[in-house]
Length: 113
Length: 111
Image (cartoon, rainbow over all chains, first blue to last red; front, side, top):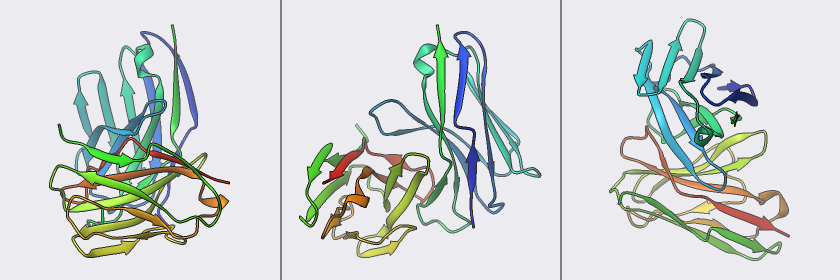
C-alpha cells in the first residue's frame, strides 16, 4: 500500500541549512506537501509541489522532487530557532480527491543556538 | 479569519461514555476529514466527507462515527470510547480535496 517514510530527527545549528528528506510510494499523487507542527499546535501547510515540477522555491524554503526515485526534500536556508518543530511529508492519495493525505511519521527538527 | 475550529481542545473521559468532538470551518470548503495522530505513526485518516450528507471511511474508522448535515460542521462521535482511542485528533478541510487546512487538535484521553 501507500507509504511515506522520513527520518525521525535532525539537529542543526542556527544559521545553517536544514535538509529534511522523504520517500513515498504512490506515483499517481497529484501534490506532495510539507506540513509544520509546532509544540501543542495543529499542522500548518508550509509548502507544496505539484507532481510535474522538479523544484519550488519560496523564500527560505526549497522543495526538490525526484519523481524517478520518489524522493522529496525540504531545504530550509538560514535555519532559525523558530524553525524548531516537527515536519511532516505527505502525499495526496492517488488521483481521486478524497481529502486523504498519506503522512510520514514526522521529522523533529532541533535548532541549536 | 479563515480557520478550522475544533472543540474541546483537551478531553479526559472514561471507557464507554459517549462523546462528540466538534469541528467547524468558515471557508465554505466541500471536503472535511478527521485524522488521528499517534507517536511513530504519523497521521491516519479516520473518516472523510466530500459534501453534505456524503461521508466515507478512511483508514481507521472502527469505533468512530461522523455526520455532515451542514457544510461547515463535521462532528466526530465516539459512541463507546476505549483506551486505544486515546490520541490527538485533527479535523481538516479543503476546497478541492487537496491542500488540507487543519484545526488546532483535540487531545483525548480515555481512562
